[in-house]
Amino acid sequence: MKKLLLALSLVSVFQVASAHGPYRAFGWHGGYYHGGYGCGGCWVAPALIGGVVGYELARPETVIVEQQPSIVVQQPQTVVQAPPPGYHWQEMVNPQTGVKQVVAVPN
Image (cartoon, rainbow, N blue to C red; front, side):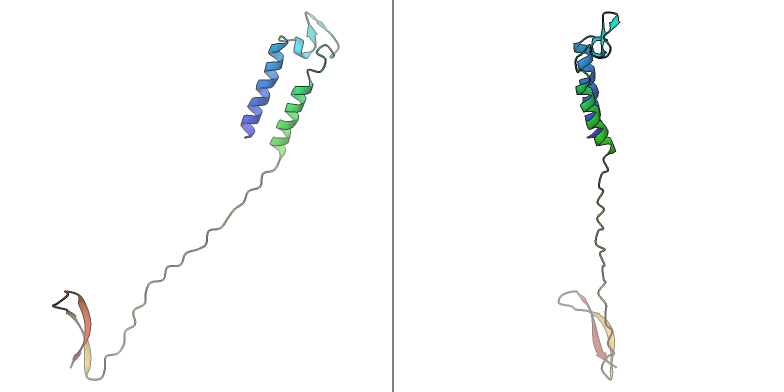
């Protein structure tokens, strides 16, 4: 935004200067100087544009920093129980489904 505003202000200043000739826009007329009043207010537009550009360049910008919430992933905990008295745990494959299971087998 600031670069665009600066570029537009420079273009407008040079446009005023080229419309009146290279020296006429700043008070010069054919080799003599009219004491700064030769243009009759040609300084107003560049002064306004310069003021706007200066204001935009000097204006502080607000920066908002948002913190992302932290994500906590908890692994499911496996609870190992003691087998019933007279049994022990053994891993077996179920013949019908083909899935491994831990079952209590008698001692």
